[in-house]
Image (cartoon, rainbow, N blue to C red; front, side, top):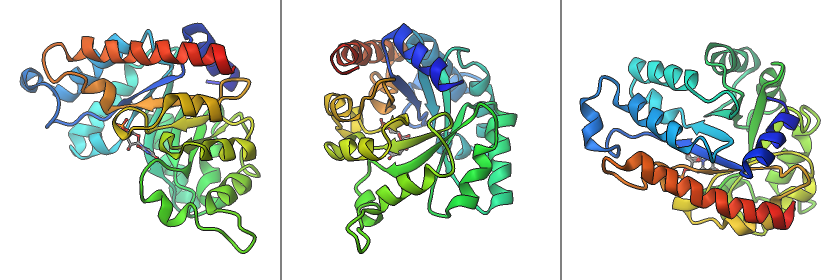
Length: 271
Ligand SMILES: O=c1ccn([C@@H]2O[C@H](COP(=O)(O)O)[C@@H](O)[C@H]2O)c(=O)[nH]1
C-alpha cells in the first residue's frame, strides 16, 4: 500500500485506528478453546467486527510464535484473511546483519504478504536497509517507544545535547523516505511526540500506548498529526479484551467504534 492509498483509507473511514492482535490463550473467551484453532477463530471474529473502523491491523508476532509451528500456521491464516483495503503490520521488531535481515524481510513481505514490519534500529544501516529494498513495503522503525524502559537508552543525550531517538530519526531518513519508512512513537510520551514530529515532519508514526497503557489520543493528535494525518494509533488489549465472554467480538466493535468517533473529531480539528 502506498502512502497516498493509506491516507485515502484514513479519509474514507475517518479513522487512523490500528487494531492490535495480541491473542493469548489464557485471555481469550473459554468457549473458543474447543475450536480447532482457537486463536484463528478469535482473530477472525475481531477482524470481522472491527473492519469498519480500522485502517490497519497489527498482529504481534510474539503471541503467535509462542505457540510454535502451530502459531506460525495461525499467523499465516490470519494474514490471509486481512481485508484488502487495510494496512497490515507484522510487529516483529526484527533487525540483524544484512543477509539475515533480508530473510526476515522475505518471511514477512513475501511468505506472508504483510505491508510492513517493525524493525529495531540498534544494529544500524545494514540491518535496516534490506527491508527497504522491497517495493511497496514499509519499515516501521522503533524511535521513541511507549514503555518505561525507553528512558534507559532512547533519551540519553550526546555531547551536543541530542537524544538518541533523534539521532535514529535523522540518520534513518538517509536510508528511507516518507514513502517506505514509518516510526514507532509511544502515545505515553506526551509532548515529546511534537519533538519527534519536528524531526520527521512527513513520516507516518505508528503510535502504540493508548488504552491499556494510558496514553492520550488527544495529545497524540495535537502533537503528532500532519497534513496527511501521519498517524496510525494502535490499541490492542483495550479492544480485543473488551469482554472475555461470548460477546467479545461485539464488545471489540464497540471499543473500536468509540475510538473511531474520537479520531473523526480530532481529524476535523487538527488535519
Ligand atoms: O513502543 C511500543 C512498541 C510496540 N508496542 C506493542 O503495541 C501493542 C500495545 O498493546 P496494548 O494492549 O494496546 O497496550 C503490543 O503489541 C506491544 O507489544 C508497544 O506497546 N509499545
